[in-house]
Image (tube, rainbow, N blue to C red):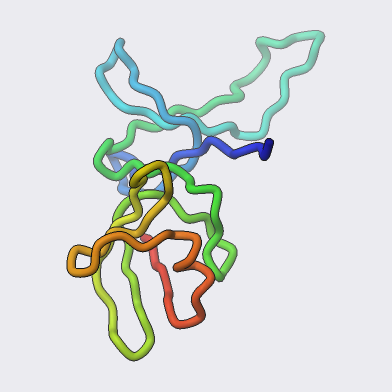
Length: 129
C-alpha cells in the first residue's frame, strides 16, 4: 500500500498568504487553523524547550487538500479553484474535486475530467494561486 501525504493549504485570514500544513477546527476560538512546524526538534533532556508548532488562522473557503499529484513544474496540486489552459482552445476557470472516489477537474461546460489524465497531457496547463 502506498503512503499518502496528508496535507492542506489555505489562505491566512489576516494576510491572504498561503500556508501548508495540517487542518483543524479550534472549538475554543471557533476558527479553522493550519499548523506548520518551524523545524525545531525537541531534545530528550528538555522536551518543553522552545516552540515546534505554529498555528495560522485560515479562511475555510480557501482550504484545499493535497491530491498527492504534482504539476508539470513539480508544484503540489491541491483541491479547489484552478485556471485551466488548453492549447488551441483557450483557458477558463475550473475546480479540482473528489468525484466518485477520484480526483477530477470539474469544468462547467464539459463535466468531469480525471486529474491524472489532465496532468499527463502536453496541451493542458493547470495554474493555482
